[in-house]
Image (cartoon, rainbow, N blue to C red; front, side, top):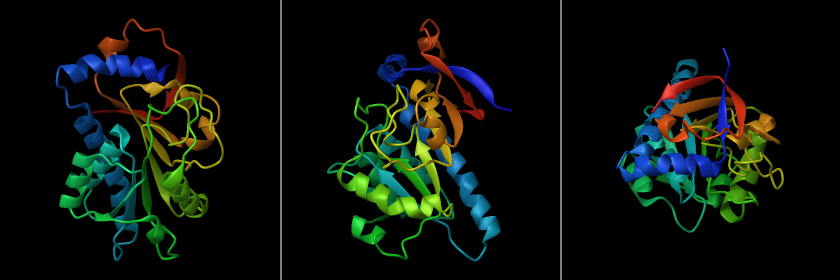
Length: 236
């Protein structure tokens, strides 16, 4: 059954995370482990449906924590071929090294232009709550989304949004344009960002899953910016 939970601004979530990070809590690793379990379930469904085919997964990896979450999660997924497309000049180094050590393959935009480059699952780890007032994707990220959108809209490719769909503003749910991958499921960490319940979010987030990272104490006295309906909460 859907559950209604408080939703918070990006600034409120960052403030609640800060003391845990300062205390050395491995929030990224916990978030990535929860994300990996959700993605593994999707991969297992594909393997059961198509036992003679190895599912193909693409990680769109930005340079920030979302990219790190996506890469660390992908490195833990079994029974899938993993490709990684860095979407900027930098990439989360630890996450990338971990994914490559587990057999992931680096790809380029040119590879996505190949008609044979069809992926079963895409992990959207381009942008997170650091997105500013203008959430528009640019450069490699924008072109990658443009190339992937046809397969996603034809329902052949499932998208897992890491924390929120890249290109969705985390506080007001707006987008600059249609260069956003609509998610099959959005796995959001710590607390629901209020932008996931506003603006265009309903068209883009798919199923909304909250990963509990223990931010309750940091948010206990914070007035919520809104509320959102989630399908489930999982422990991170």
